[in-house]
Structure formats: C-alpha cells, structure tokens
Image 1 (spheres, rainbow, N blue to C red):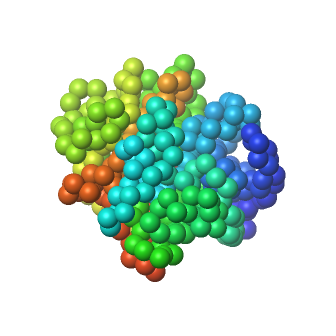
Image 2: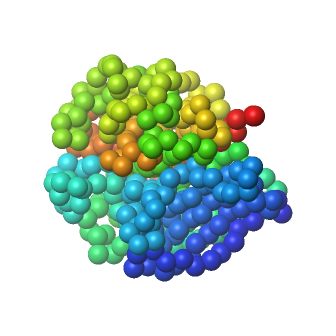
Image 3: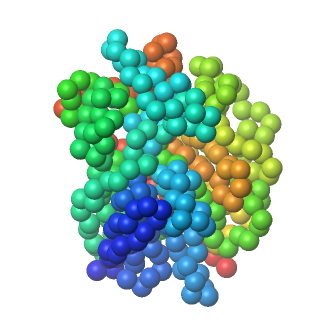
Length: 343
C-alpha cells in the first residue's frame, strides 16, 4: 500500500491514549490524529528538501503538558460551533442550560466534542490515501451532559490523507428521542511551512465571502454588515496586524469542485513551500477568521452556521441552524488542499 496507518500511544496532560499516524509509504506526507483529545488531527506535515518535517497545521509548543483542546491542530466543534449565548438553548418550548465555559465564563462555547475522548472506529489503507474514523455519542461518551441537549446523537468523522490534501468527512445521526438541533464547525490553525516570520502578519489571505455578522461581545446581533477595511479579504492581502475574531457569511465562490464543493479561502506567503486552499460542501456556509493572541497561526474555520445560531433561529433569523428528525442523518465534507510551490 502507498499509504499506511500506524498506531501508537502518547500522553498529553492527564490523558494517555492511542495516536493514529496516517503516512505515505515514502514518508513524504503524514497526519497525526488523537482520539483521546477530541479526535483532533493535531498535525499535518510535509517533508522538506532537507529531510525534516514541516507543519501545515499549527500545534502549540506546550501541547504535551497543556493540551488546550481548542487551541491546536484541527478541533471539531459540535453540536454548536462558536458561542451559545449565556449557555442557553430553547428548543421546542424547552430550555436547556449548558456550562458557561468561554473565556468570560458568560457563554457556552464550541459544543461537547473537542474536549473529550472519542472512540476509534476503523482505519483504511490504500494506494492513494489512508483514512481513520472516530465517533462520539453523547449518551455513551458524555452521559453526565446527555440531558443538556434535546436528543442523543452520533457524530462520526473520517480523516483522509492524500498526497495533496486532507479531507474531513462528517456524518451526524439523530438517536432520539426528539429532534436534534445542531451546527458543526472545524477550527484548524494554519502556519505555512517554510515561513520563519515572528508572526502570521505576512501570510496572505483570500476569503470568498461577501458579508460579516455584526457582533457585540462576540455574539452576533442578527445583522449582516458589508466588508470594509481590515475585514475585507475578498482580494488576497496580508493579514498584517489585524486582530481577527469574526464570523463571515455569504460564500461568494460558485461550486466548482468535485461533488459540488466551493472554495472558501486561500492562504499563501511569498516564502512558503506551498499554499493551502480550503474547499467545502455547500452546507458549510459560514467562515470564521481568527488570530489567537500569540499570532503564531491563523484559524480559518468552516462552519455550517453562525455563532449563537440557535438563538438567532429562535428569532426567525436564517443562521444555518439545522434540525434533524429522529433517525435522520446528515453528511458533509471539507477539504484542505496543499499546493507545493515549484522552485
């Protein structure tokens, strides 16, 4: 097989568990998935000409001692991405309250799945890619919070590593007993190989979006604003010193990829070994751009809904919030495509 899956064990923080390495047989590209930390694809790397591995996804240097699950790699955010205002969900007349776990301790953030153990389901090896699948079931894997959401769910995610891309496939099943409200988001951190700048200001970003959700204290008001000034990345330009933490909407690129995918964003740098292009199925209709305080990476995050989407939907605002019937299934995919620069 041209691609393999290798299994090992690693410790980060207070957890030891299986780590899955997806790797080309010639060791030109690899990825590393940690089921015991939210099924996070912590690393995606390509081999440099000097033989060393170069990271495409950013992982914090202190991951092993301080594995904050939403600050490295590719966190999976479900059943809601972003903040849920005041940790409150009202669904079909019933109120649900979630832990206020954002930085301000005022709102719930990023759902249940990035912080807890997932179950490794299966691996596949082939001539063109390697794949691993993990699953998180609310009632089975986090029973103490099962009554905090209207229905039990199973979220299965498959990472597929090819030579030129990392594909992420998600499938949601509603296990009942009621309808399942949800949104899904990914929170990948990028810093391009070959760049040795002190921060990501020199990275060039293009985002195919047409509007931004206006927000007050990180919660959308329900109004969409025009892109102006340092929030307008419709044409490629350096990130510069702009502190980003915004939810954009109105994907402007027409579906033109395999299976009807559309390109959402492109990240490049004049001295990088390549560029990353982010493609997604149409259900990923929002895009978050975020620069963490350390500015060592930029997060380019495809979401199926806005932040606080449940509360916006409650007021009749089209936020992308989804409702799945009992026994229903939903599936969608995202691809991060690596384009090496020919020297």
